[in-house]
Image (cartoon, rainbow, N blue to C red; front, side, top):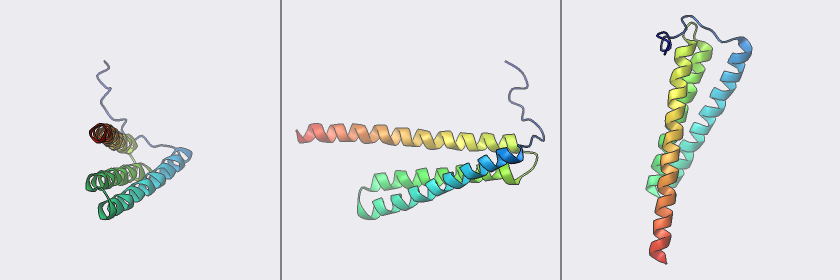
Length: 116
């Protein structure tokens, strides 16, 4: 393992075309986060509380990812650190979704078994 592997690339800046892609991704990520929060709030009001809470948490995590992605574009000198923070948050968002989906499938199977 290279001893510099965990060292950030000091002063690295993405190019303008790269920043455009990152900014678009930040915008869509924030939009998805807001949609998830709104859907979660509606689920809490109209339906299953746990599903609503999970949607809100996922939405908040995606909004955080968007903030980290935007920081890549608007700051100078810390692009790699901001990108790594965004990727860590994105990984957490996907992990939450995987856990929630697995739990929902298990609960659905148990409910179907109990009803049969």
